[in-house]
Image 1 (cartoon, helix red, strand yellow):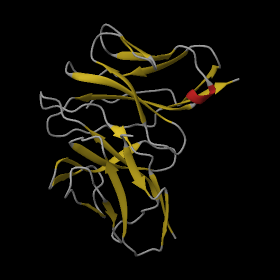
Image 2 (cartoon, one colour):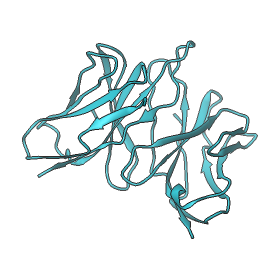
Image 3 (tube, rainbow over the protein chains, first blue to last red):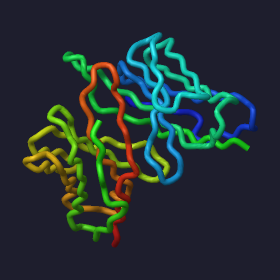
Image 4 (tube, rainbow over the protein chains, first blue to last red):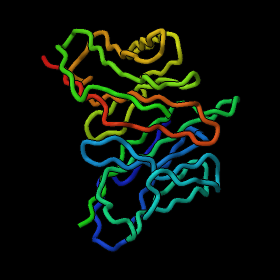
Length: 116
Length: 112
């Protein structure tokens, strides 16, 4: 089955520890994205990547880092510099049209991170 | 990207049509209207999008007013599984900055 997988579904970490969230897609999509969602609110963009070995900051990149070494993988590291890391993290991907623009985004199931 | 305004919540009876409104009065000519929904604790699911014309797919219909300042998502026969938060988003099909700005959305509750 094609799709986007995120693991783990639930993650608990102690304050001050870095943690890496996994996102893998087998849709052959060019672009990948990370969003953060807080309770009762919409999504906010953390980072996005349009091609391998390249990525751009979104609206709330501080305290996060990413890598895009492979087309199908876009891991997100939540560092100790992130002041309030407890949230629901969503990964998405989209494919690029021949016109150069991007189709709609497809989302993974999310990872709920709780920092104790 | 243009901002959108949606009612915070709506109810709908099971089996009836659910009509979810969205205002986007500052939309520009090259901005599309997208709809997503998010069932509790899951990732958002793409529903439909359009530019000027009305659109229909297996999930829903999208009606965009002639002046494009508002739109309505229609779920023709709502079921309990359609209970979710529905997001209306307007965006340009960017070449270099492709992202979706999700607001608070409309929480639709389908009741038996």
